[in-house]
Structure formats: structure tokens, C-alpha cells
Amino acid sequence: MKCIIVFVALFAIVLSAPLDSPQDAQVLKSEFDNIGVDGYKFAFETSDGTSRQEQAEVKNLGSDEEAISIRGSVSWVDADGQTYSLNYVADENGFQPQGDHIPKAP
Image (cartoon, rainbow, N blue to C red; front, side):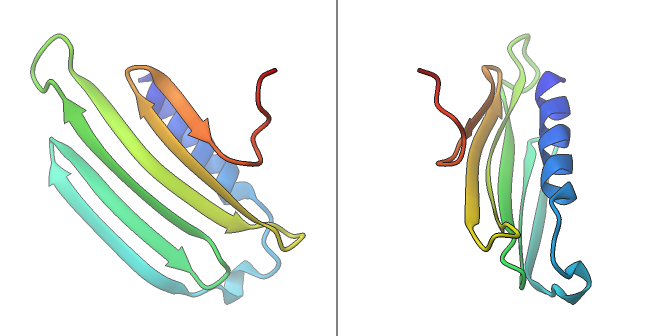
């Protein structure tokens, strides 16, 4: 449940990023595959430089160790013209983001 909350929060942050003219962005690619109870995958890309892909699978389905494992990436162009990319894994070990713009622990 924690992974889903973190995922939704991350998604909200990305969606709240200001865009110069979001009404002008066009969808260039959109794919969705609902695998059923075992997981899902999707991807999209827009003309403003935003793209995202994600896939999830249920590990140990039906056992006490059942967990969802999500892997994905998102990239966007900030108002300053710089492209940012974020790769992430969310699983039984928590949310694990990776990106050059994320501060590193000393």
C-alpha cells in the first residue's frame, strides 16, 4: 500500500510541473496493456518532450509474501529547457528513484 501512495504522489508531482503551453502538446504514443491480476504496463509520449513508461508484476501471487513490483521511467523538459529523467523501482523494498538531478547522500 505504501508503494501505491508513493507512486500516486510521484505521479501528481510530475503532472503538476508547469508547462509552457500544455494545450499545444499532442500525444505521439500511447500504449496500455492490462495483463490482469498479474500486472500491467503502459507507455506514453507527448510532443512537449514528456514521456513515461511503467510495468508492474505481482510477485508470489496468492502467498503471504505477495508483493507488487513496479519499474518505470519518466522524463520531461523543464521550463528552463533542460530534460530531466527519473528511473524508479517500487517494490517490497520501498520506492527507489534514480536520476542525475536527485541529490546524493554524502
